[in-house]
Every structure is written in C-alpha cells, then in structure tokens.
Image (cartoon, rainbow over all chains, first blue to last red; front, side):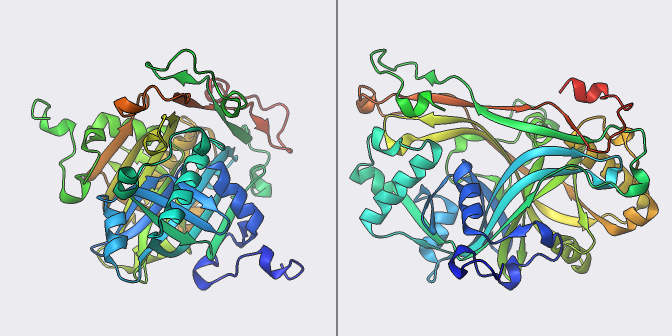
Length: 223
Length: 223
C-alpha cells in the first residue's frame, strides 16, 4: 500500500485491522465507494441499553459522507438526537457474489464484497444539507430519480431525521475465486467450484393509479 | 394474533415491538423461518469496548436454533468464549425484493423482508452438536451439500468455533406492494411503481482442478 498516494486509501485503525483473513482486507477508497454505491440497503448497528441492535436501512453517499434517514420517531434517530456527541454506529454493506463449494465442508465459503464503517453519526440540522442528503438517498435507489420526483416539502422535511457519518474508519473485505481445498482433498469425488449469484431488475410494474400518459423514463428503461 | 395458536408466533418483547411501522411487523414462525432459510448471509451485531460492530457471516438453522461459526481466532467467537454467560448479539437477515418509486421523494422505499433476532450466543462445546451445526451451515449455502462433501476432520473441528443462538426474541418486518403517495400527489407527472429485483443463479463454474469425470450433482443442476 505504500506505493499508493495517501489519500487513495483509508487510514487503518486497530478495529479496521482484521484479526484474520488479512489478504481479503482493503482500504482502497475507490473499491469502498463502488461497494457502497452498488447496494440498496446497509445494516446499521448501534447500542441500546448496552445491547447491540442491527437494522436494515437505506442510505446515500456524497463524497466521503454517508447519510441515513428515518422518521424522527425511530429509535436510532431519536437516540442520535438525544446523545450529545452523536450516536456511535457501525454501518455495514455486503454483496454476495457467489457460493463457493469445496470438496471439504470446512472450505465452503461465499464470494462477497463488504464494507464496514465505524464512526459517530450526527444529526443533520442544516436544511440545505438535509435536502441534498435526501436527494442522495433517493438516487441511491435509482440514480437520477431525485430530480424526477417531488422533493420533500417543509412538513416532510420536519418529519424526517437525517444522520451524517463520515467515511474515516473504513475497511472493505472481498473474497473472489474458486474453492481453496487442501491438496490431499483435490481428488475427492465431490463436484467443486463456484455458483455465481445473479442480481438483476425485473420489468417495472407501474402503480395501479399511474396515469397511462406518463411514460417510463430513460433512467428506468436502461436498468 | 389472538386467533393463532400460541406456538405459531414468537412472543413479543419491548425491543421486538416497533416504535413505528407496526403494520409491517410479524412474529409468525413460518414467515421468520422462510426469510431465514432463503438467505446466504446474516449481519451479526455485537458490542466491543462499548461500540457496535456489524459483520456479515454465514449461518445455519436447525428448528428454533441458529448457528454461526468462525475461526476460533475471530473476534466475536473469541468474545463469546471469554464471556461467562455468552455474548449478547443481534442477528439480522434482509432480502431486498423491489425498489418502490413514488411521485414524492418522501414516499420512496424498498420492498423487503427482514428478520431481527436478539439474544445471547453460546459456544457449542458438544462435538456432535458442532458437527450437526456445521452441516446446517453448509446446507444453508446449498441444501443437500453437507452430505456430498468431506465432513470436518478433528483438526478442522478444533479450529472452528460454533455459536448457538435460540430463536426466542424474534421479529420479522416486510414491505410489499406499490408506492403510497398522498392523494394530492397522484396526478404528478412522475412515473411511479415498483422495480422488482431478480435474484438467481448463474451457470456453475467448475474448479480449475476439478476432475472432468465428476458430474454436476442433481442438487446443483436444479438451482
């Protein structure tokens, strides 16, 4: 990594340094961004009454900042508002790319790409930042959609809490390739290899009450 | 729910009762099992030095017990071994089924099915339970695979830690259907509806060193 410019990788910390599987870890910003940008939901972890809570939620990225949102009544959003220096969270995004079938049960695995972010989330109070963050959240679902929908009105903005998380303590982890059986197992009579997982979009289903005059926009027809 | 037999639903607790979106919550065992059985990875949350950690990991289910595994050197597994009464975890599984595009940015959403399990994970020390749990982990990846691979030998068993989590404090949450725009937004000129997400398997890729005489087993050809 020493050959890369300092700003192309995230600085490692004790908790982003894996205790095992080091060869799979990466701190490359471009890789991290690509993993984040391809997913629809993250898994948001926080601590409540001393116990862990993990909830799936939408998010959006602008540069080195992630935004998550929710009703101002939802638990993590209320907790971030109450907590003075913010809410400590761990935000994880995972893609499952393939099933890895080895001859040995022990070497079964999956091919995956994941990003784990540690940090403190803060409530966004600036109204313009909140609007831009909500656009990013909509564009994470379908790029280009935010400006082809009715943006939030003041009542909706007031009902929505947005949290900001800086991409600082970040690591990616990826597994690719075929099974890693031990040499003595390679002649065993079990099929081995990878079952790739395919992810795609089905045909768009218009809302029941959609005006038939409204055509499918280009950003959806190319999905 | 009062009309259902008591054992067909999970007992609700304060932390499995949603503060919002109550209509989307379910405690139905069959629904929970189906969501769990369809996924390849869960997101495992635990608390380390007071901060949340969320990691993707494989799991397997046997009845009302989930098993997760890892190297005896991995952090959560080591922590569960050290902690006297086990390790408090939150284990979450999510399927993203569709992108919900409303006319208003505010009502954009995703269709999803998720399960959140709270509980205390304990190390499995009984060797036979460990073997059966590892079979369940392999069969979660591909049903029927565990008995068509070389099972763990004593050295591998010793290197693998398995945690047990009882399905007791469990809830599911699902969103289905089209966008829920406010009546006054329904005539806005934005396409609205659902983009279904398709998940499937690609053609199996044999390992580079697979003996060509080994045929693709039936449980893979039907994927």
